[in-house]
Length: 266
Image 1 (cartoon, rainbow, N blue to C red):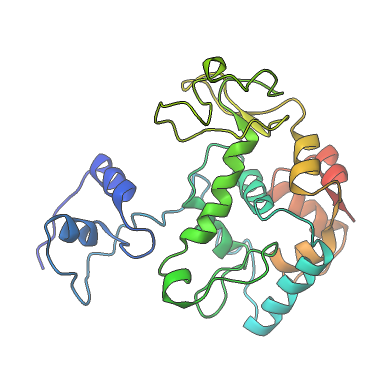
Image 2: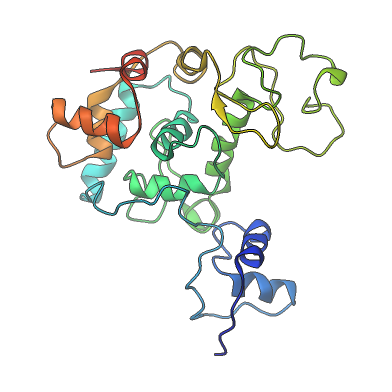
C-alpha cells in the first residue's frame, strides 16, 4: 500500500463529508468520492476523521474500566434516580469537562461517552437519560446519528446574537438565525426564553448566558436536582463516594460550588 501525506485542512474537509462511524479514515472517504468499492480492510487508519478526540486531551487514567454487567446496572441506577432529565444534559457535562462553553462539535460526544463509561461491551452507546441504548448495524457503533441528534438539540439553548433572553425574536427580520430565515445557518434556535451559551458574533468567543444555570435547571433538569452519588458511580465506577471524589469531579468537570449546589444533590 502506498502512503501519502495529507495536510490538516484536507483531513478536516474529509471529516466534514464523511459518513459518520462508517467512514473512519480519509482513505474510505476518498474511495467513495472516486466511486471505488470499499476495501475489506485497510492499513490507513492512523488518522481518525469523524471520531477525533475533542479539544481537551483525554487522560486514559481519568476514569477506570469496569465489568459490562455492573456498568449497565450503574447506568440504569442513574437513569431511575433522575428520570425527568433531558438527554441533552449529557452534552452539558461534556461541555463542562472540555470547558468549551458550547464550542464543540457533535462528533465530540462519542469520545466523551467512551471516557465516561457510556459505551457498552457490544459497541453501542448509552445515554443514561434515554430509555435504551442504540444497537444493531444502523443504530450501534457503525452509525450513531440518532444519538448525535440528541446533542444537536442543545443548539436551541444558545443565542448566536449575544442575547441572554430571547425577547422579540419572533420576527424573521429580528435575527438572521430565525428558524424560518432562508439563510443556510446551522445554529438556529427555537426561540426559547433563556440561553445556556451565547456569542455576539461569529468572531466572538462563546460564553455562558447570564442566567444559564436557571435555563439548565428548568429546561434540562425540569427543576429537579440530580443525585450526585449514582452519577459519580458511572463516571468513577471503582472509587468510593466521599468528599474527595466529589472534589475530583468538581475539578475534572470544572464545576464551581454554585453549579454543584444548583444542579446536584449530594
